[in-house]
Length: 181
Length: 205
Image (cartoon, rainbow over all chains, first blue to last red; front, side):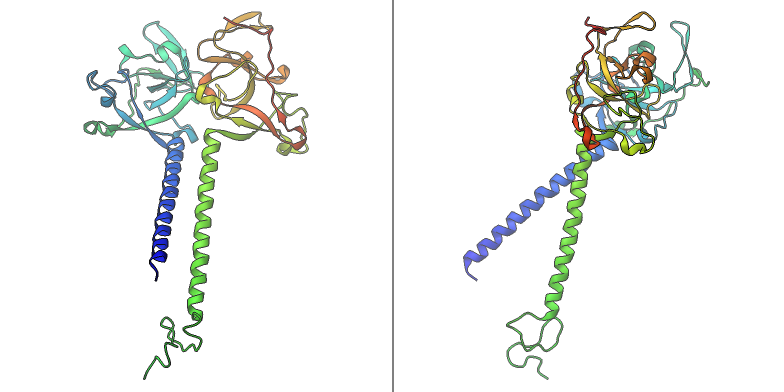
């Protein structure tokens, strides 16, 4: 065969290879995007409102590299089955551009006792009461009241980073804080 | 026993004598090539359908989707006639865009879709009457309510049959799922959805 034909065949093969590589990257990127939007994604946790569950040390030297990164699953949103003690990610009711990570203390119908004001609050339908594990430095339902369940973006199941803190995030029940309706 | 008579007249693949070899390919080779072509065609068709389905899903999740409007709380803007004969086929279907969610730029008079604060599984369509910092007058109770930060006051265009902020108060902007821009169905009602400002209802901070 003439060398020119061989050259054309190898050009076409390289071209086809690059084209199918591009298409595969695009498809896998799209699959990753869909999975991240609908099923599970990885989010960093900032601040110490959930110490010692997340970010047990305040390390300003390393900055955001030492923040815990957690796996947030969104399957819970399809059936909206939340339990007491679940750690959830939700949009802040006072600033919709921010997301917070807190633990569910009360579900619709529960009565929550607030020790500070000696008040008893009933969680309305479609709402939940959230608090951080570190009450002294946590902005939560004790400040902004119960939040609508429509603000919940996902449920935290595992810590994925840093490697020495990889573990499952447990539910913690605070039986003394809420009484069912 | 010589399998190769004059030249190569026996097909190497199916081992039958074919006097037309080597000028024309054997029928078995032609069959295999057409099988492979059909197989490749079906496989690439499947892959293309899958990719386009994925693209459609991503666009619907992130950018725009089509939602049916139920009920008459937004008459006459949506569903101006209550037609129980046709059922859900006569409901208005509207285009809901989600670009507004990335910058959260809402204006007075926008029609939005949001999760109900009392039942997170339901979605409602109402118009934004007040934004954070506005003072809303409620004629019925003679109250004046200030819309808190990060919230908005929504009402339906048909006040007599609308469950809105007059009942459940201002809603957090985090509940908003999208903004309605056009009616797409039924065909005779295809139009752009206008902003309607109710200047007398709100006063800025």
